[in-house]
Image (tube, helix red, strand yellow):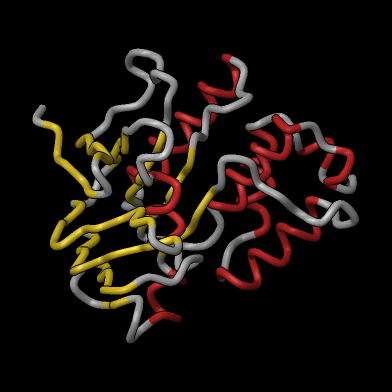
Length: 211
C-alpha cells in the first residue's frame, strides 16, 4: 500500500501534483490520464527521483522522507524512454542493478531471454534500438525484491510478441506478491493483464475510477 499525505510537486509556479490524502492499495493498478496530467511526475516522485513536499509511506512502515533508504529499496521504476551510458553493456548494467538491489543475475538473464534480447547481452547499449532499450529497462525494473514496480508506458515500441511477454512477466511477478503501478495510453490485449484497480490523474490529483 502507498499512502500519500499532503504531497505537492511544483515546477516553478506550476503545480504538477497536489495530493492531500490518498491511498493506492496493493495489486496491479492502471494509472490513466492525458499528456501533462502528472503521471510520469507521480511515478518519479514515488521512485525518489524528484524532490517534493509532503510524504509517501509504503505499507504503513517506511516513509520516503524519514526512511528513504528502506523506501527506495522497495520501489523500482521503469522509464518510458530509458537512457543509459552508450559505452556500457547490458551485462554490466544487470550486475550493477543486482548489486544495488540485491537481485539475482540469473533471473535477470532469464527475463532478457523471455524478451528476446539476451543475444545482445554483451553488446554496448549504444548499439541498441529503442525497443531493445525499453526491454532492458523493464528487466532492470524487475531486479531485486521490490514491493512496488512502477512502469511508465511499458508497451511503447513493443510488438505483439513483446506485449505478451511483458504481460506474462507482470502477472507472474504479481503472483509472487509484487504490486504494480502502470501508465499506458495503449489498451492491453483482452485477458493478458488483469488490473485490480484503475486511477486517473486529473487536475494535479488522483481519482479512483469505479469498477
